[in-house]
Image (tube, rainbow, N blue to C red; front, side):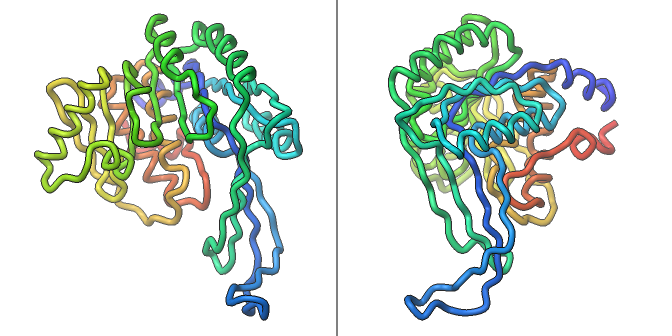
Length: 314
């Protein structure tokens, strides 16, 4: 498929993103002295920025590629939730956010000085069971109208019903991609593609001393979870896709790394959009690898655009 044909196909793709959303806040400032109260730098804040984070950043990446992104999640009835909703509207994301008055919207506040992150402060609360049940009911309606599903697990409690969500998507014939969290992957049983990073994979399977051992562990995990595919992202080593009887390794793109935050969001978003547009999985992985190489050269949670992703691809 030529680049212009692929871009048109991406615009027709419909991707449903479900998971833990958050607001990424950045405070930028100058550091000129050490505090007299403690041996820490004093940062004089001069600029602030806000971006969608977590599953909201996944949806932002989907929309940046031209696809139609629907986001289903939970926020608090607070200022951070309102700010996140406003940002999502600007990104042309159809946000279906359930409001839980018992929680605070998850916020990650990063303090930046001298082009370095000096501190991160997290604010978070797990959503209530009543809100999660109502979200599951809406998911059952939305999944029928999409071409692919992303379940973005950040371990904040928003995917308590993930096993049922995977089952619903598969029964409707929708590919369901999972970005996992934690050491128990059994809850992702039956997913189409699971995309752990190297550290997440190692936490579940243990270490390895050779590519042969790595491949054996990956294929055993894939079979145990009854997943169609397992994609392990390996930072500077690229990424490796495991399907039944096959292994595809794609080396990392050779470009300067500025900030790796959010790269996993870009990978799973690109995979889902490509699959929703009719691409095969191998081509989707290669596109996701290129997209990851683009966003790590940008600051903070960033996105890749079609003109960047598909340049010189004809």
